Image 1 (cartoon, chains in turn green, orange):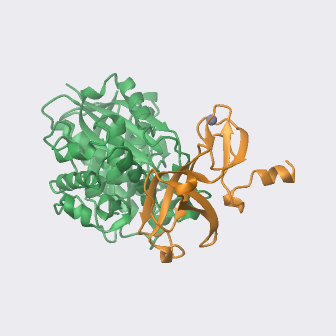
Image 2 (cartoon, chains in turn green, red):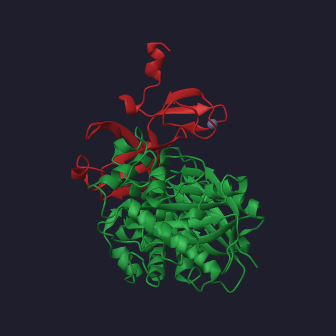
Image 3 (cartoon, chains in turn yellow, orange):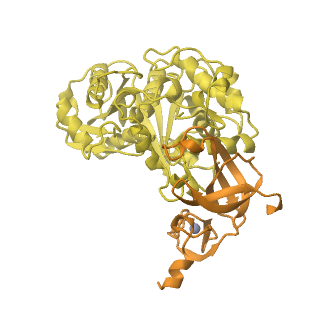
Length: 373
Length: 125
Ligand SMILES: [Zn+2]
């Protein structure tokens, strides 16, 4: 059994003068405090990467910085899927007995600590060096290509994508610590400047500073609602858009199917969603491929309230990457923290489903959470 | 491999003005290099040049460039095209194209090197 003892995020946004390590330590301490644990209780550590602190051994650097001496340590790099995949790695370490209580942590000062163009350059590794970079491609353009296909293939409108950004902003406006909280309308999204058509500025997540941490353990929490991770799955079917054979079958379903087989559950058991939303189109593609929205209907269903905090299937109640903010690996951890929080305070026993993608719908990682009776 | 074989495997990324399509024993086709099949890891059983005609699967007009070499060309388009030979490729265009329209590639230097540039072709059907 793997228990999610605690999850914590710093505020996302501008943290002038704070280093990646300082932000990571802040989130790690908040998670320890939430779990009621001392650092000495941690015997496993999983770290992500930080574009503002590229290092061969970031996990060891953080362990030393924070005063940990873990018996098991890993650093992971799967782009946007890293946060969820780190929790999966922690779960595997606990289930195999290599660690008992694992801290998962990532964060960086991507907004205030990047060299000019630094984050863009690091992220452009995701593009194929021979077949994509020489064409003047950028990451938003790869997702914009998927968006243009999506709008034509599924007969959706740009306003439908905008509706997803509006929903994320509405949720962020109700969340302490969100990077962007000023309410938005579809018209605001439509009027924002074009980045790569059909994607506009407000279809794209911001760059933020921030950090997040989880504590997973073989031991159940002593107090409060008990939430455990009952299923995990991954899928990795391509890296580059130029070798992605089917935009409608990216690997998302394969990852979810593996997680649900392990959890012995189905989509109908899921009541809370944390779905990666680097762009509005990312959210539309994932919701629809996974079957949580009809084909071409994600935006309309969002506009109709289905994914509201008090809707049928609450989605990214913190506001997602699009509005809570995106500080790299920790950006994709906030969805898990938000679903954890929602489960602990839910008035029903439905499951939480968290899904992240890295690259251009390339790396998929999925987790299923359950509140113990 | 002799010189003729090596020439036969050259595509636009190494200065030949063409896409090169590869097909594995399972019928998968790709035009992103002569390595193993991206879908099944099998080797190519055949490799042949594409005529450069195809249908637009996706197209975006960029208003942001990766660097100063590209920014003077803004806005410019990036296309994903299904070649008539079945392989999926990316290419450049100075203008945007509608999904589903027919295009044909020519190869010309943009910034530093020759790249595929797609043009609308009523006769590309
Ligand atoms: Zn194959």
